Length: 482
Image 1 (spheres, rainbow, N blue to C red):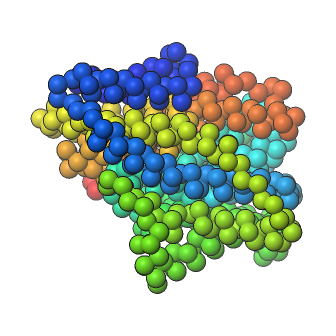
Image 2 (cartoon, rainbow, N blue to C red):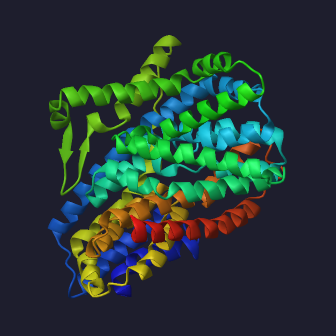
Image 3 (cartoon, rainbow, N blue to C red):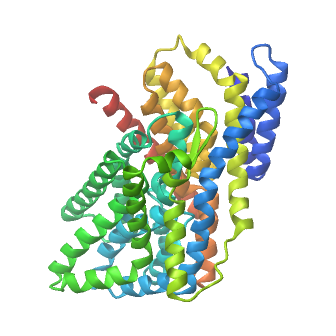
């Protein structure tokens, strides 16, 4: 059995022990898979398998690239024309108690922004605010906690790609992944209270439960109605507006005045949401648009009109026209670099699939019907994939195919796919790429002097133990009662 997952183990060993880059680890994994396929009697390697693997890898990578490139360009425009600066000013002056403001950020506005843009762009908003309110070590940990809806980041990109790899409907994967959110978010919320140091009272616990409940219900409902791309956006904005209005009312402020100011500063992000909804309505009325914009692979496809790419491009066009910015720069090199590691890990997974690694693994596990062993194992591997790649998308590219097929062998294909999607997303907040990004943004804002990467990593690893336990507990409930 070890031989059949050896390419993945070699990749993980290269990253974790040898401390090589993800790209290097992926290349070594691909080469080891090719060598094993040529050497092992029950595996196959030929030009047909290589061609099929490359075609599928290209299509799946194109799905990501067409969101990443315009997403980076949009982030640059938002900074250049001070949209993010205006949002920070609005939040700083919001007449709400500090600890409530932090919760509205962590479980409201920041997940919504990250769900639209991805790539940690929400940290550009979060870090200056949090570091102005708290010590560097506390602000750094709170910044990590804001990365809590990664499975729906970048307009649900990792969930959309994960669903394609697993061969299931993206809305179904999104709904099932949402089952894992309540306990994980509650854990993050309680940790945030402890970091704030106000002392946990009964009313705080009630507030946390209500906050997380509304977020989780909104997230599930959006996926239920097929709005996978907007699920994180909707959940974050609903939480921010509902609880923000409640807190303003309690403070005897005018919620409507603040609401109008909020709409004004959030215009670019709301434009993305409006365009996504409009395009969905258009393709529902003219389904031929989906047919003519589809690239087909072997069990996977790329549909331009189903991608968030068009909505982001339209938003960029509106902002460019408004500011008479006639030369929008698309950071092609940066986008290609971001997709390079993803391409290699997808190639590794596709190569293992077509060469017979997964088929042989399924055959070996066919007689193992103890699902509780998988309940303990699968969240661990899922979280490890997100942690070592620093990406929900990269983690899914690495292990989604194996996870879904393992689940199929036990009659739990969708659930096991959701374990992978959720676990990889939950672990990203503690990954080194995310920690380095937080430290970098903090240093650029002259707040990073007292920020220690090792202490943030230690905090993240400890919290990951709790995340793992929450995932296992959720799985037990789902298998027993759902």
